[in-house]
Length: 309
Image (cartoon, rainbow, N blue to C red; front, side, top):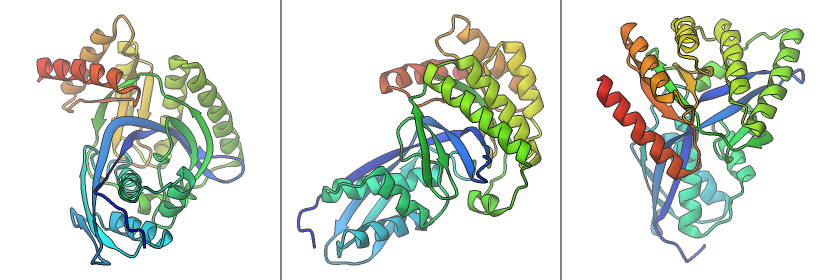
């Protein structure tokens, strides 16, 4: 038993769905992650006189299982209390569950001063559910069913999403268990799109990122149809936005904007106004970048929404 421990803290980011998701010619399902600056926060209180893991909220039983698996792996014969708070909406395809599990790993690592590699975190998660690759920094190509890294691509540039939630909740585990048919020509198309997306992310080529994301969103309609997608694409074109990205196994979609563009403020207000005219509620998300940039973007977004609402 490890004798030294403290209260451990961890956090992990969510995603705004995926920049691209599909199947490659090797018949493996992949995604390109789209990290956002929404987080799950975990505090772990070790209990040396107990073997039980107690989690708050109680519904987050996957997090309790994650903690138990990590402690058993490192032969730490204690229990503890997990307190979880999260900014990430659940059941929307925004990686809320994956973020919880990764944050649990960080909190236990902090409590016991453990070295837990990204690959080991992925292994622990793979025993529980498919994952969104949020244990890795930046945007990655990820085999989400096997919880296996394909490639670390690049850190994201600043991107703002003016988003809409179509409502309802989708269980990602159930959704991913449904077999989807992809023709070989379709998998070749996804491979070409992945190559273009990866290069665009490395080059910070926002126009190509938006173009490929939109193409992927349209291709995904046969698997998880979004009623409002066509209207979002129209609004994006009218605003001069970059494109539209979606939560492929969730309920969100968003118009991608460049927050460094000279007409960014106009674009954002225009998109929000048009979305409201369709009877929807606009929500603002930002890509996960350096925290001072994210804080600046969040301040602008709050001011915009306050003026509109």
